[in-house]
Amino acid sequence: MEKLNDKKGFREIVIFLKPKLIDSYIIKKFLGTFFFCLLLILTIAVVFDFAEKIDNFMEKQAPVKAIILDYYLNFIPYFAMLFAPLFVFISVIFFTSKMAVSTEIIAILNCGMSFRRMMWPYFLSAFIIATFTFVLTNFVIPKSNLIRMDFEDKYYHSSTKRITIENTHRQVFKNVLVYMGTFNPLSQRGQNFTIEKIDSGKLISKLSAASVKYDTALHKWSALNYYIREIKGNNQVITKGKQIDTTLNINPEDFSRDPSYVGTMTSHELDNYIKLLRLQGSDELKLFLIEKYRRFANPFAVFILTLIGVTLSSRKIRGGIGMNVGIGLGLSFSYILFLQFASQFCLKGNLGPMLAMWIPNIIYSVIGLVLYKLAPK
Image (tube, rainbow, N blue to C red; front, top):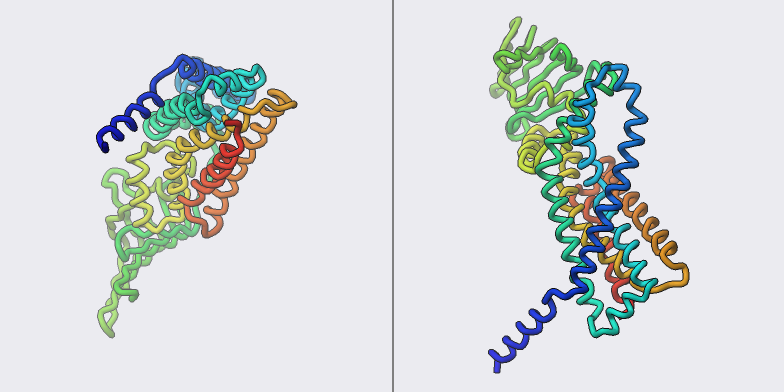
């Protein structure tokens, strides 16, 4: 009896998942509308971006080949993946509303297909887009971002950069803290430099130097006019000198790294750098953790927004396509706004990076489930 029930259950699953003509129809509609919307938005974005930056390109004599291959060839995937989940949402709203207005949804349900079964090709398409988004975001786009940002620094951004970085704290080893009063990334020199070694909450040694410089050949830091105080029990040992080399687990770039650098790291590089920032006690740790969790949350958002889009637009309403598209755009902008608020609460407050990136997905998952319950069955 149990074997018969198992076979019956397996047969029902096979029948449920068996491809039908309507599946290919919905998948073609979904992916076709998505890529058409993406192409349309990207074309508009490239035109406006080029109109804004053409004066800088001409002023700095940027080669046409570099503009096309180094900049726009890498700008397009970056911009596309930035809003891919929302393009999915708008695409689903648009073509599903057209199906509802032309009573195609009613015909599908009247033929015996359940609303849950009708969702299958939608989620299959969402899976394809989510996988594509995840691979590009974690492994392809970081490398292209590096090329694009190098081009911008050379042909678009002003050559003047912030000269000094002030009051920088880093933890370079376990129980080893570094402080830099000011640091000049051009000369790679710093002022008011200290290294403190702490054991069980007690200071055991402190190196103070009027200035410090980085030797690019030896990859070492040299403290100039240094003063070392070592505490041994109740005694102190004082050492002075003109120059001493130190081995620090930190590079000059770590003092002057632009926050946008986070987008140039692959998933593996990002994990390794987060480990280093934890060790250093860097204030930038939250920023890199937000990027890490965002790369996982965004592909998952494709499924949530697909669910909301289908349930919201499958009902034929008096306002027609325009009403559904308007509601969809409203929800899209509210999602972006909510995501930005959550990021700022994390950076400026005590909200955890993982929770900050997943709060919008959690809230919109609840909205999607409520709309699914209310959808016509």
